[in-house]
Amino acid sequence: MTHTNPDRARGFRQFTIGMLAYTVIVIAGGFLLEPQTLTPLVAALIALLPIAAALWAMAGWLKAVRTFDELQQKIFSESGLIALGLTAVATFTYGFLEVLMGLPKVSMFAVFPFIAATFALAQPFVRRRYA
Image (cartoon, rainbow, N blue to C red; front, top):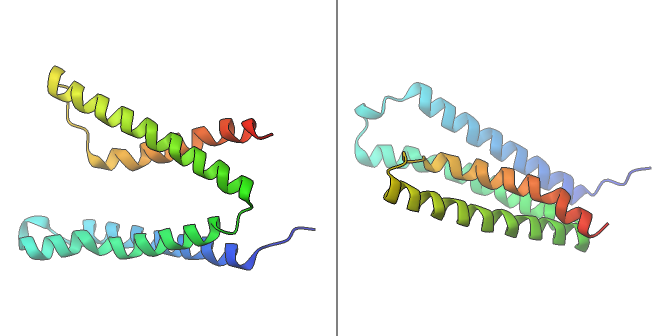
């Protein structure tokens, strides 16, 4: 029999709804707006609008993670620290290569997928350490 923690389920539901809202806001803005017709203030407000949905989603994720047992929280924390460290090393290294070797600029949009990928890749290694 599986036991479902209602706080965890609510947290993940909040995360899912928040990320869906974020996605809809970003895609709708991309398809419905023409950036060159917006004043700088309106453009800034529209660019910042998805932050509310993302913060709400993040609060749900945190609520769900707080329901994990201590070992799972430790695994998540260590995986996050590994992802943070690898991202710092990669971004600074590439930044120096951009300046010193003239490599092409990389968009900030690449940073979060890199963090997510390194977090996901670190999890099995960290989990194995505690097995």
